[in-house]
Image (tube, rainbow, N blue to C red; front, side, top):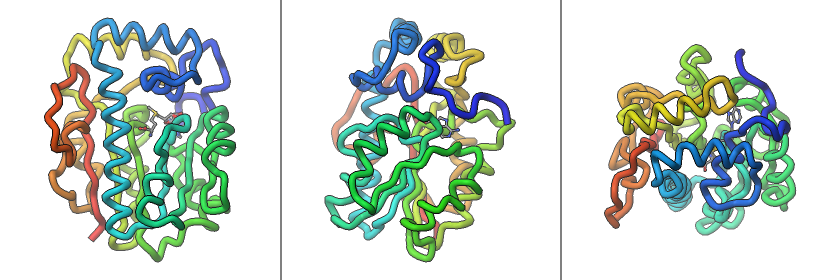
Length: 262
Ligand SMILES: C[S@@+](CC[C@H](N)C(=O)[O-])C[C@H]1O[C@@H](n2cnc3c(N)ncnc32)[C@H](O)[C@@H]1O
């Protein structure tokens, strides 16, 4: 496995969770994260809007799944706490809904443990999604998730941090194979039909760091859903998924969809 196993503890290097927090207007970020994000914002000033749209997509998807009866969620690559969080959104349908928050960043893990995991149906786990077996075998996952019942697995804005050499499709497939019929996958990631100049700048900023970003063609993103049937409207820009109001396109694009295991 390449890359650092636990980025986030080094304030001298940018971290995905902190950059995303900065874009969303949070305070859990350092100068190095703001400098990296500002360089991309200079060529893609709509990136804050894209980050908010991505977050809103995840929450809309959870609400749809919770309304359809799903009451347990695993959020892979959670990021710092934002409101509403996954379990807050799910509990609008079922107050007993449970959630496992997974992130490899130790600082994110501690924040999520303190701010999200406030009852025994919500837990924060520090783990690397590139090791699905560790997550699926984790005692907290075993305690909260009943894989004989439908589960919602979120893989939102995290797979583009995993290179093809580390088999992102295989990661998703290991979760899929544990999920029973009726379970759902919520996934989004940067798409390679983004504006070339903005993509080049983001790649340049991220090169050689733990936020190295892999833009993928929509056909490849679609294949992450192998073994799932896509809910309407299929794979779209995140701001378009089940959104009535029309929003202007962004220079960088994140494609997302929700798939149901038949
Ligand atoms: C851009 S944030 C996305 C947060 C949230 N999923 C959302 O979309 O609103 C990506 C998060 O994934 C985490 N992450 C990146 N690679 C990871 C890995 N291999 N295993 C676990 N977490 C990872 C980062 O620490 C960060 O918190």
